[in-house]
Figure 1 (cartoon, one colour):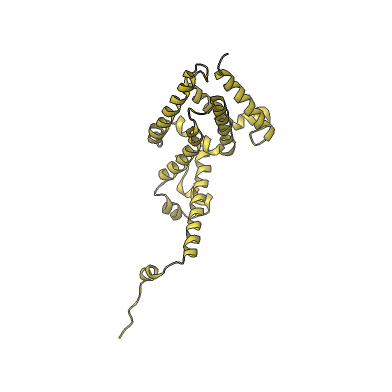
Figure 2: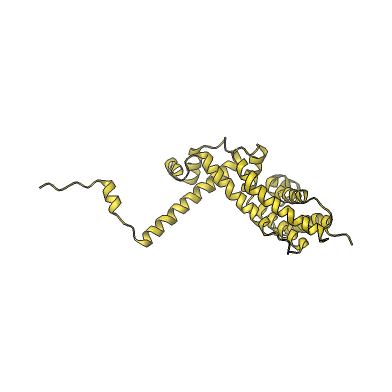
Length: 226
């Protein structure tokens, strides 16, 4: 009687990984996906989505093209995941606004966190800026739903602060837009700032000086008039 030949797929199906082996495998997959996203972020922020290829991302991440396409079905999906991650990081500090807070303290903290994000995530900020300038063709749904809902909620909080006399009369939208514009300028135009001042936000003294000045400029404009 002839022995039945077992196919490689059947062998794989019978092979059961131990919990420790499974954990190592999952960790390796997480690291590989993170490396791909990091490489994609760098290339997208410098070349844009249209100027970047899957092959370039694979080469920079030191993986094969098939590896990239295993984790992301195409370049557009990879781009959306990279920029959506940024949006989550970018919007998280705004979510903490509440009516119960002291508005000057809350806004001062928000400005600080936003400036820290510009310092720590400059490539992500530039990529988001590039996407918005182009009309956000791949991100418009994200901007029209979660972002709009969050902003509407925080506009209501700021309006309540104004009505309670805790802030001077101010349009909440313009206040939020101004904070975004000023703090993100230090990421999106860091080359210009470096050329003019010889410094950037990684210089601790420059960061602290920048923070104090931005807080003074914005907060003195919304502090209640006595």
